[in-house]
Image (cartoon, rainbow, N blue to C red):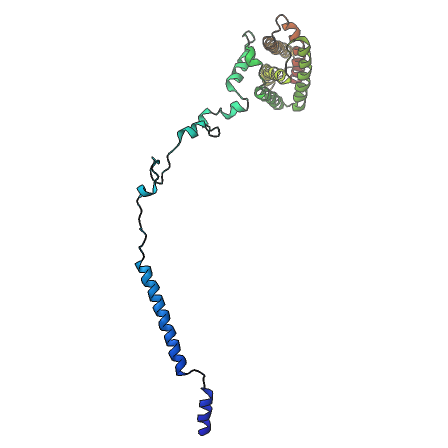
Length: 256
């Protein structure tokens, strides 16, 4: 039993004494006094105002409202980067597609006696010619003739030949796009002839006479437009002859 008590006293031995306990208590009291003094000093300091009026934050020269900047209309009116959608042209006009000009050119071709407007005919408009070439190929296809390659090939070669002749005959000269535009629009009567070939055969007297009339129609319209656009007065027959040869090839494709 004595051994057990001795073991307990040895096991619970510590260097902590009453003096150390008193010293630690003094330290905690000193820390508490220091914390209390700091808290009292903080309480004595004046607290900042939680709300400041907008008049105190605004400068004397500011005339607008608080948190609402005044709009500078001069800046927006003079800015070159801000454009109105109303001032922009339509997309078709930017692409060079004018339906009113297409309609005027079509009516000029359909009426050979109507005077042509040189300012409109001098434009490089390929919308109508491409449409008429596709229509000619489609009508030939419906008639049982697959001739798309011949139509496009003859059109390209014919435009090159007529372009070279017109540049030799006129003093002002003409662009290839203008020649292609005029010859393409004047292909419209040939599309009518190809449409008739879907319903009856043109290999006969009636077909031959109809083809001659259509060839004269196309060549007369094309020469009239070239004369008015290039100021070539008195040379219409000279211009109509090569055009008639070109449209005669299209007539042969339509008949045979």
